[in-house]
Length: 329
Image 1: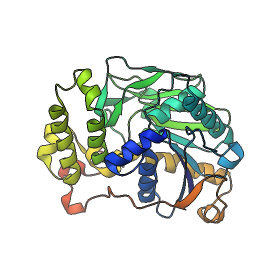
Image 2: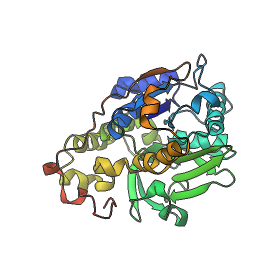
Image 3: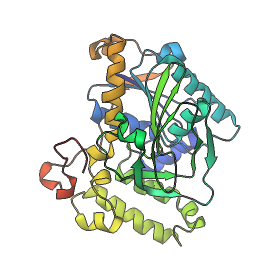
Image 4: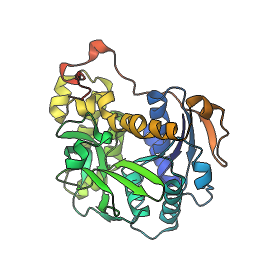
């Protein structure tokens, strides 16, 4: 398979994240895809950059899938960076290549197709989105196949989709943010996206809390940086030792977050239920894409190994077992 990862972050945000966790959001996606699809090829583009030359619809059509990352950009602001992101997303839709986005990736897709995005005001989801509930459409949609009636997921955001584009499907909501998951169809394209972050490791969640500690204090989620650090340290420790039930209990987390396969479920479902069927419709095979030329103005390279690998079976706590029905329980 041949993937295109689109960095939604501007250059300064990429560098800040690299200093925090050693990689940009796009590099996190590249590493994650190496684990999900061994041997896949990943190209990475930065459409928000002033000097970027992202591929057009014809070039994007060469790919099997496009992944849009999170970003601190505010999609509702009229800036050159946002305009470039929206223009790129419309090229993705025009290409007919399946696309997936998390957090700002969902917001970019919604706005590009005619929806609206807004600031959350005093509301925040910091660390984890709680009690995400599939809608009636979401309960039978393949993106959420295997999710229970309510689940938690890594999340940290200050903006949200206000209105989905015409014809879009709302797939999941919770008490903080109405649009937690959606399917958007526009032009020739199909986009599946989530407001939360199935691609993140727990170490990256902890680092995000530390980076946004001032905002969390300003919105009364913490009283000091020490308060934020205490929570971040617990999340870090759980990432290092997922078998520690005491940490899971203190953070109020279960297998939906702790188990790597459960945490990444939407990404696996996207590849299985949208990317692979689209490849078949296009008459493509994995061998075809390994031999295909990379699109112009992208740096093609093998996907790198994921560092947040599944732990050995003997370390899996009872609550992290995967049910025989294929559901993460």
